[in-house]
Image 1 (cartoon, rainbow, N blue to C red):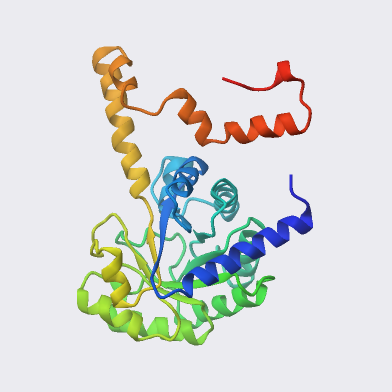
Image 2 (cartoon, rainbow, N blue to C red):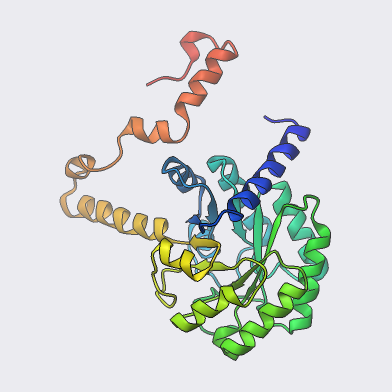
Length: 306
């Protein structure tokens, strides 16, 4: 358990790390995680940052779609678990900020305490929708700008990254969406996130239009093109999130395993092609637990082992 002072310093170091990564010439890749186990897998592959997906969190925690069902507390709890498990700078979905400007202030402080390095808030009305679904409605520009200013004022750590997202493209068209983003940049947002562009001319225009860095959402809907990271970098985007590809891969693998078990009544063939018992426990920190038990003098007979 870390001390309060140590915890504050650790959180601040994550925000500074995120800022430093975003300052590099190349774009930063942040694969999405909906749980702590996936977060560990992302860190193991050597990625430098991680993203908490809202749609994935709703699927994993509720088994339901991303239609505004999760509370702020549930999202923050999940973000804290992902941040702790990955030990990477975490950018997290914070939906609409869960209310007006005062709610946004509470949201920012809660995510900060959870060890998150940055969040994005969106200009949808509640109940919100996944940005790649239809049926969205928007709040006025002035209201969103006020929420951005309130969120910035609430930060204890000035390096905490507040990202302004607009879902206006599907509702009001590209030009109005760009106008909204301009207003959000003027309000002080650290990064701009225009959701679900589908045309290359729009993607080329977005980074050029703003002084602040821009985010590319590689959502699995396919509405936004599946571009390679080098091309995204040439366009000028600074952060690329991949919200649910790990989760979608898991769905396919789990379905295959369960189907084989149901079909044959045996797990023998499946067991040849999946992670082993020891690989599983090593992934979730078995060796660290063993080292800690030895360090703190746990009786050798009582120490955990394979």
